[in-house]
Each structure stands twice: as C-alpha cells, then as structure tokens.
Image (cartoon, rainbow, N blue to C red; front, side):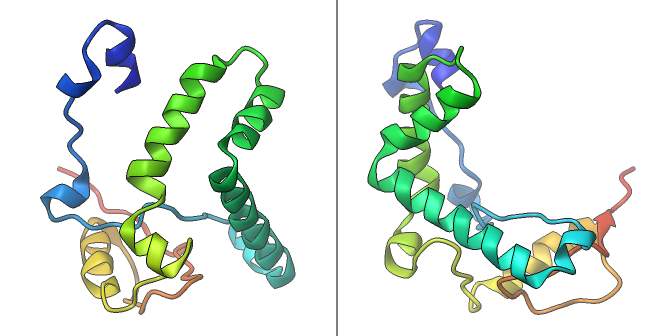
Length: 145
C-alpha cells in the first residue's frame, strides 16, 4: 500500500483485499519455534512473554518500535516505517478480538474451521485441537499439482 502511495496513488484509491473479508479468518500472529527450542519450556515461555511485552510496549508508544528498528537498521525511513506500523496496528494487530481478549489469545470456538483449512493444505499425521502452543513441526506442505 505504501509503495503505491509513494508512486503517487492516492491512499483512498488503494484497496486492500484482506483474507478475513472473504471468509478466511486465520490467525494474524504467531510464533514458530524449532523442535530443539520446544524442548526448553522455560525458554519458550520467556520468549513468548518478551514478545507480548514488546508488542504491548510498541502499542503504547509506537515510537519505541521505530527506534528499535532504526537501531537495527539505521537506513530506514522513520516516517515511512511509522506509517507502516500505524496501518499494521490498526488493521492487523488491534482487531476487535484482540481489544476484547488480548494479544495471543486463541479463540477455541473458531479454531476448528481455521485448523481444518490449514490441515487441508498441509500433510499432518493426525489432527490436533489447537492450543496456545500447538506444535506443528510434524506437518509439511501438501504437494501441489
């Protein structure tokens, strides 16, 4: 979207086609870990806690996120990245569900349709009920063609 805007397209003329608008309600965030890391429950819990804290901090003060990105990559365009972050927060992160239930919550009532869609596209040895930390390391992409 911002690339089009930078090329002179009026922002109000840009249409974003989000999956959820067409019936595909998938989770907007997730953390993928290696099987090796999964063996260390304390490390996983610590990483997840730090990730959620980071998001909460950036939501409270988006300038913190831009400062962190700038520290990592001094060449970023801070104004552009702030705009990108604000769009992301408004459309993908601070959804009505997140505002009600918090970041990282799993809607167990909605999970079966989501997991069914996901499982049809991936080869998994057995179906599992999604949890906050459903391991998916035993799944692989379904061959196409």
